[in-house]
Length: 568
Image (cartoon, rainbow, N blue to C red):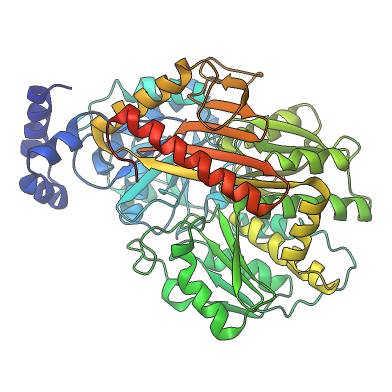
């Protein structure tokens, strides 16, 4: 959009909208803010919508939410029979999540689509579960996952309980594009939808049955373990508190201390501005609690409770954060060993992981006779594979799925990563190994000793705004056009997924595979960031760390030369 068009759209919003909060923001905007808020429409894709809360076409607000919902309603009405036109809606604790959920429900209802909505905040996995349980054609989760407080989002789920994949996203987006953001959507007050019987509460039984499915994932059988282990838990001011403490308590784990400052829902995230359990800062307050109470284990889930991070005590009495990859291979090995011991391993077991997730998992899988399916980044692709297995009558062959970004799932009752399942299985695994006199750090070292050391790191380069998008495109083009070479890594193979590869859908991802590891470049689908994944194999941790540091230093210089600016 050129400058004149941007300003015209700004003036149209300025003179048309009636929302006092958004009007106030428009009045205070300078030219740069106007440009960033209106230079494009907020992108809709497989992750739905995600953006900064505020006024403008490139922001998430009641108008962009209503427009997306109207397009989605048009898609539903053209695609599904009348009896199947049912949707489920949930939300997290973020700023305006309640408002956006009600706007979404109202637009659906005004289009004569039946809505089931959770009365209170509820995690992503409970939305995925409700979609299939209530036989919905679509689900919507209002959340921006682990993004900072200024963000919110709108995730869309298909009738299989998975986040929509590329084909559905493109179809829905074509309907959205036909609608004007300010004027072209149907709606009426939320209360009217309730009165007409078009907006209903999700029945309590749905949540109860979800909890029972999570509990069924236990692999303890008759094993006696110490369930008095001391647990520190933080929901990071999000949705995880009630479901996680409920499941743990019902399974006998009652020695739980919740981080008080992060216990109640609060979209401002006052003590963890970046509520992502992947980063140490988000867990710092919980780690203080660990020291205060001499806890055995710390858990933290992100605001929509689909990711879980952990910390464990080391031999010196300090606490070590484990990466998503490390927890993933620990859980996978635990699942394999316990299924084998209890006779629950299927004849043709399958593990599913993403292409950026630790390759060491495949070695573990092979040792247990488990087949591996590699998919593109995003748990929706793992959920999609579970659905395909179900259609083949092989649903029970799935035993585990995970991704490096702290997402895990041991069952097929939902089709997205599940922080409730992840947290409870981590606690069970911890208690089981403790009963054998083994810590998780000991168990991890045993895996390194058996399969070799592997270091996986993720580096994100932030490129905000229109100019940032152009820079990311330049970086991807640079590496895409290179002759399978990259500084510091002796490349054996370059894998470009732009046109599809190994049976996977098209995706803007490039992977360089070398003798001592691999590098993956991928623009984020939800944030203005370029993500770079390094996977290094070496004889020990120190050698891997030294090589990773050298390789990353060279990469930063190369990216800086492409963008013409210093990379921190």
